[in-house]
Structures are given as C-alpha cells and as structure tokens.
Length: 435
Image 1 (cartoon, rainbow, N blue to C red):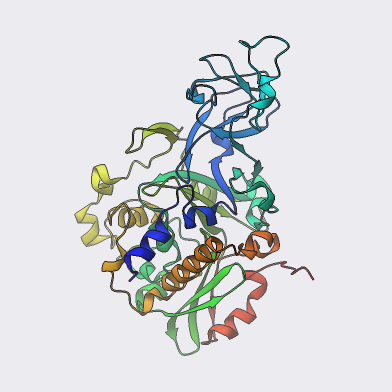
Image 2: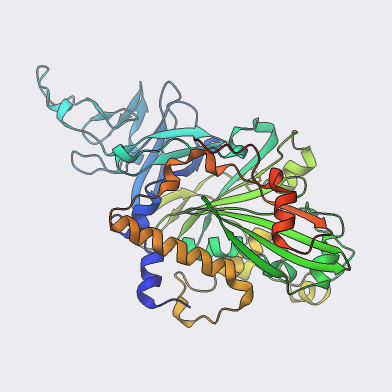
C-alpha cells in the first residue's frame, strides 16, 4: 500500500506537479500519425498532462502541437483555418506556424511589429514509429529522441493503435507490468485452446494454467527494470516471461514472434491515452498478424467530453463501462475465465477502469506477486522527489538505454540470472553504452 501523500504525488500529473514535471522531461507520444489528416486538414483536440492542446499538419506536412487557446482572446484553435503554412484563428484572423510563431495579425497596421512579440505556446514535435511525439519540458533540457527499436523498423513490421483509457495513468501501467494475472484474467478454460492474438511459446496455455503462482524477480536497470516470471512445467522445464518497464510509462511485454508494448500517457489525473505497438524485429507482419493485433479496426477519432466539459478527439473501445465490457456469464462458465469477449487489453481495461478513476492505494493489500509494482512505485516516487530537489533524471539523456524487447522462452535454467544472461541479446539487442 501507499501513504495517501505518496499516492497523491505519484498520480497527479498537471503542470507544476512533481510527477507531471518528470513526464515533461521525456518525449511523449500524443497522437497517431494516421489520425492526423493530410496537410492543411482539421486540427485534432488533445489534452496531455492536464494541458489543452491542438495538433495539426501544415501545408508542408510538418506537425505542430500548440496550446488549444489563441493568445489573443483565448478562442479555441480547434476551429481555426489550417491554411498556407499555419493555423489562422477564425475569431480575429491571427495566424501561427507549427512552432507557435505568429505569422500575421491582419488587424494591425502594416508597419506594426506586434506579431513578432506574440507566440502561441507550443512544443517541439517528431514523427517516429507511426506516432507524433512532443517534448513538453524546459527547452534547455530537451533530450535526444529515445532509441526505441520498434520505432525504427519499416512500417510493415509494426502495428500501432491509440485509444482512450478511462482511469489514472498509473493503474493502467501497473496492469501492463503485472505478469501474475495472465494465469487468470487472460486464460481460456480449455487448456488446448490458444487465443488468436496469443503469440507466445508453444504450449503457453498449458504452462500458465499449470503454474498459477509464478516465481518473480525484478532487476533494476538504467532504464527502469527487467522483470522475470518463472512457471514450472516439470523437471528442468521452466517457462520464463520477461517484461521491461522503461521510465516513466513504457512497458514491453513478452512475445516469441511479434513483440508487444505500450506507452501510457496521462490526459489528466482521471484519464490516459494508450499507445500500443506490436512489432517484429526481422520481418514484415503477415496480414493475419496485423489484423489480430490491430485494435483500431479503422475506427476514426470521435469527440469525447471530459468531466470538466473540455472535448478531445479520441477513440473509445466499444467494450466499456457503459455496457459492462459486454461480459457474458455463459462464456465465463464455459470458455473464458473472464467472460469478456475481447482482447487482453480490453480485459485489462475492464479491471483498471472499474477500480476507481484514481486508485486509493492506501487500501490495498499487496502480496509477493506485486514485487514489480512495488519496485516501480518506489523508483517513480524517488525520481519525482529528486527532480523537485533539482536532480534531473539521467535516463532522459540516455537515448541508447531504450533498446529493449519483451521475450518469453522455455528454458532448462531455473535461476533468473542464468536465463537473463543466456538471452540478453534478445532482451536488450544492440545496446552500446557510450563511453
């Protein structure tokens, strides 16, 4: 459990909060590239870390992320005209480029230099791996872009999805790094049945059904930690699942073919965005693999009203709290442990979204299966407090440290360090530490 003051520190992410400032030291995905219209298309409404924003693609194809409010009279720039290299506010015609620089104030005299004194607050952006990323921290602290391996492979080797999660960012991330729940929430009742989206070792279902109390080990690393869960199949027969947590909110989970992962980005204290990636290191995904892992299913963005009335453009799963995630009690008794006829991420959301919008961790009772969650909380709390005391996160400047992959394997080794050493090239491929 956490003390209420620690829970508050770790979950609040608005401007000026310790955790919000920690997030702002890293490049964060804010919208999928496919959700940005063609040049001069409609802006997309966002809220990231409690800040209202608009993203747009200009005439040259460059993407800008600006404050949602025009610096003149605070009109909403979602309604602006995207034309000729910038957003023109429809209220009084003020125009801004992707950096926030004011290009034109038509109501000012021709000789006026007033436009040179005005900027729309905005953030640096990059498009990598099918996502638009923004850096929202101090300009003098801007790091290099992290060397995520999945972001640099050809587009046909990955599938990207982006969707709304209706709860605090941390409980979503905690679900991602918890390997123990796989033996329950995601299993079928027929051990011989493998879910179509499961791309794990052969006989995966048998291992997680037979051993529902995995032996867990967490090893701290420069990027966060690597986390191993061991299930016993028999003598000299061990199924190992290796996951990574990368500060602040990336998880890379096991896979023997495609490698799945997710970055959770806070919208505010009560909602978050899930940016999921499934990729293969060496080859293009087959049509079947792409379909099985593509969770957007061609759904366009839709307006979604947050609790305070601000509207964002996002994608909400058809399985949600409004319909109890379409749980089927007959299926629960006969086919699926959960009874939810959706993908594992939808089963995860059914658990995390129905806890509380912000989980009260002072009421928890954690056990041995929660060691990764405990380790992550401690690390984040320390980093947030260190930053508040002026100690910058070293990882933000270590772009090379982000080269990791989730992995699962059947091994004859029972000891974590032995398996880790044997498969290090799969878990942290091509990492070269400078110096």
